[in-house]
Each structure stands twice: as structure tokens, then as C-alpha cells.
Length: 129
Image (cartoon, rainbow, N blue to C red; front, side, top):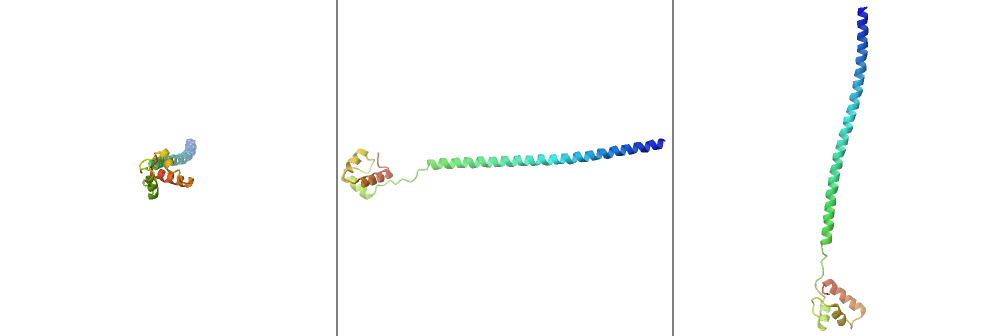
């Protein structure tokens, strides 16, 4: 009987080893899946960080461009047309900064449209004080 007991014990041990081996294979499969998910998560986190960095850089550049656009002055015409300068000279007004009251007095002989046109020209030239 000793031999029979040894065989039975070996068979039981073999069954336990096969069961343990199956469990270990399952566990290894689960762990490798977890490692893959962790790797994917780390890669996604890196990509998100890169994209956030690029977004921040683009936002900074946009803010700089907006600030530059606000600070940029459109080229302004600094000369008064010859006809306007002659008309002002006839009324004793130089081409420097013109007082609005003096200008209104000088333009009384013109129509409303002509007065508006002259004032717009002087505004564009920066000649109205």
C-alpha cells in the first residue's frame, strides 16, 4: 500500500501544481494587461502635457500679437491737402494745431458738407487741437 499511497499523493500534488500553474498564468495575463494600461495612461498623460504646453505657447503668442496690434498705430496722414491749406492761410490760420473755434469762424462761408470735409481732412492730418 505504500506504493499506492505514494502514487495517490503524487497525483494529488500534480493536480495542485497544475491548478497553481493555471492560476499563475491567469495572474500573469492580468498583470500584463495592467502594465499595458499603465503604459497607455502614462503615454496619454505625456501627450496631454505636451498639448497643454503647446496651447499655452499659442495663447501667449496670441496675446503678444493682440497687444502688438493694439499698440500699433495706423499710419496717419500728416499733411493737409493744398486747397485746404490755402483756404486756412487766407483766414490767417497756419497749418499747426488749429483751435476749433477759430476753424469754425474760418469755415462759416462754406456749406455744411464742405465744413465737414475740411474738418475730416484736418482730423486725419492731426491738425485740430
